[in-house]
Structure formats: structure tokens, C-alpha cells
Image (cartoon, rainbow, N blue to C red):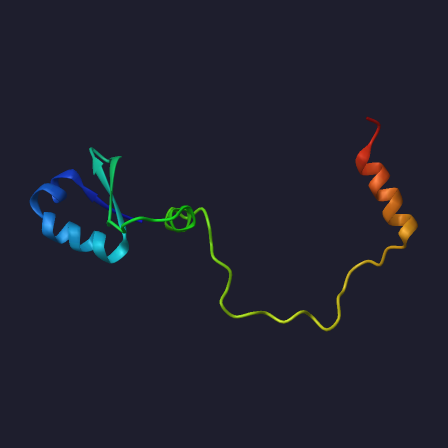
Length: 92
């Protein structure tokens, strides 16, 4: 994420806004501390688009990955699975 100083925003507003348009969001600092967030207007975002923009959601890959031919790992019998589930449930 890009950062600029309050002074840069004041003296180079056009450059900073161009940077916002390019990267989407810029943090403005005052005395080295982040104080404000300037972001580009995107109209009516839905919740998923906002989460993606804020970095809280990553969309799935557009290219599907095939399932592996051979799956490695332990093999469990149904008794083992039952015992594991009983252990997970515990005494309630």
C-alpha cells in the first residue's frame, strides 16, 4: 500500500490523486503516523467487492487445478474414524 505525507498531499495534490487512481488507495501520514486513507471512488460496491479491495477476500483462481491422480496420506478404517470422532466429541 502506498503512503504519502500530509505535506505532499497539500503541495502535490494532482500527483497524489493520480497515484490513488493507479493503485486504488493511499495512506496519508502526519509526523510519520498514518492518519487518513484516500481511496478511489468505485460507485456502489457490493460486500464481496469491498472485502476484496480491503484484502479480506481473495477470489478463486480462474484456472482450475486438476485433482491429483494418486492421493497420498494415511488410510483409515471405519473403526478408526469412529474412534477419532468419539475422541473429538469428548464427554459432554
